[in-house]
Length: 279
Image (cartoon, rainbow, N blue to C red; front, side):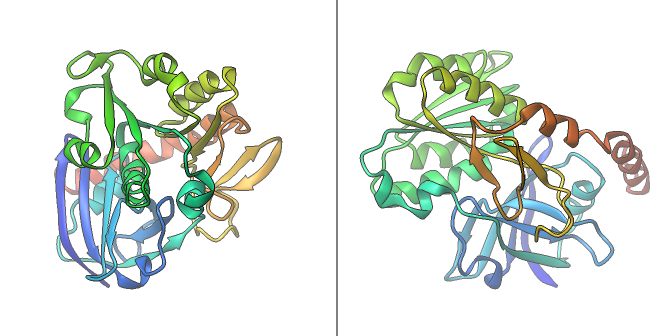
C-alpha cells in the first residue's frame, strides 16, 4: 500500500494526487508513466508522471475522471493499493538534451495533456532550453496548472473553443501562425488533436513527437492491449512508447481501438456512480 498525501479536485473533472512512492520515481525521466491500482481488485490505470520529488519520494499525478476506475480513484483518501513504474521510454529530447541544443521547440497540449507536457518543459528549462507552449481546452475552467506552465515556459499561448480564455479556436490555428519560429513540435492530448497537429507540421516537414494513450493492461508488452500502428508496423505504447513520430501514427486505427469497450465502460461507470450515491 502507498500513502496518499493529497487527492483533490482541481477542475470539474480532474484531480491531483500525491503519493509516497520512492521506488516508482527513483530513475524516472519526463515522458514515462506509472500504472496504479486503487484497490486490490481494481483495474490497472496508466498515468503519466506529472511531477516528482526524488528526495522526498513523492509522486504527483493528474488524472481525469472518465470512467469507473478513475471514479473509484477519486474517492481514495488514505492509501492506494499499487504504484508500478517508471514504465515506457522517456521523452526523446529529455533523454538526450545535448543532441537538441539550439533547437527551437514548441509544445502543444490539449486538455489534461498539460500534465505530461509540464514535467518535460520543466526538465528542459533546467537544461537551458527556452520552450513555448500552446495550450488549448474547451473552456477556461478546463485549463489546468496555468501558473505552473507559465513558470517553466518562456511563453504560453492559450486557446479555448468557446473563447472564455485566450484566443477562441483551436491549437492548430496558433501553431500554423507561429510555426516558422520553431524546429520541433511535441504534441500531447486527445488523439484527434495530435492528428490535426501532425497534419499541420507535415506540411512544413517539422519533426513531430506525439504521446499515445491507448488502452493498456499490464504495461509490460505481454497483453498487446496498447498496440498502435506506427509506419505500418505494430508497436506497443507501454514498451516502445508512449511517444512516437507523429507523422508515422495511424490515428484512425488508434481512435477506433480506443472506442472498443465504450459501451461496457459506460455501463460499469453508471454502476459505480450508483454505488457511490452519485447521479
